[in-house]
Image 1 (cartoon, rainbow, N blue to C red):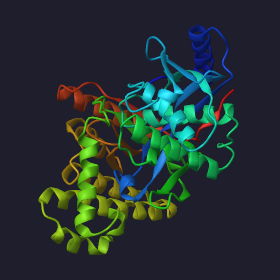
Image 2: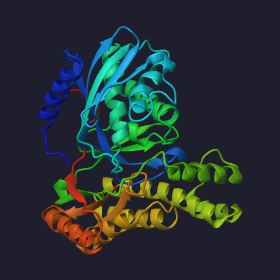
Image 3: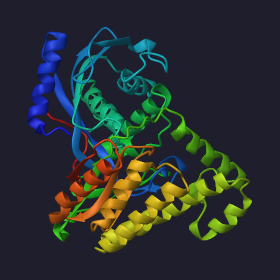
Image 4: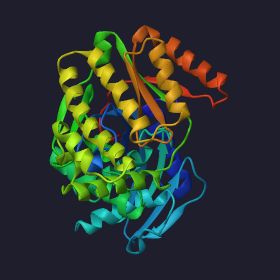
Length: 394
């Protein structure tokens, strides 16, 4: 976890840009990673989710080109990746550059006049930790494109929502990751000290107060360092199962199955696996609604209970947890957490726990010890607050 200040990263990314390209950038833009408080894998089912933006951000220094060429470089990678905008496809440029090139491609597909760019990126969002480093990359570049091309998409919530949709399309169609859109929406629409209630069917949003510190608590994130990839097939197979189940149930999206009718819906499904998948999605959407009510009512004990129930559902019904996530959440609970759950796509990544502010160090050390006892790679734990969305930094 980087301890660099935002100002230090901005200066570093400007310097890195100049070293790679031989001239100064036109500006620096950034977008945050995210933690989803609750509502996992509900987004591509048209459901509800409740993310917050993290203080950890991806920064993009950029300048426009007039030759239709996109050049990309990163503080985390050697060399420069080049692709002509007219040649961007699921095969071109491939790798991490597809997340960048895909954003320009998607905006062009929407009819915007998008120039070529020189881009240099640096990030304090842990990669592979389930904290949406990919969406932070897309949205930082999207913010740069919006300003450099004069698109004005950062000016209001409507423009930001359209930019989020372009970034979603970039990840789905060019990068090949079948994500549902929560991450990009969180990166572009979140406010400080609030969680973003996102309806992934209507794409309407509401800001829900989220200030644990005032109640004496903190949100502790543990990056298990069990890294995952959204393009390895496991994520896609869960989405395929949901689409298959929706077809059997005669609905477009599993969001249309009310929690009150879950038992009847499960009886119509043909395999135990489909029943488990649908049970998670329907109950998870219901948990989001209850969590929002609990947060608005100041009932953190109930939020913690919902965290715990969500993790059990993801572990047993959706089968996206792993040993590291289970050890971290169980240890946090044993040391006084109100609740703990994995967050993100699963199969690795991070978990979150609501712990007393004065217990952050104790719980972090306990998780470290539990990992060491089992011979697991040492994790990284850190408290976070709800931060702001994509912006221009210089």
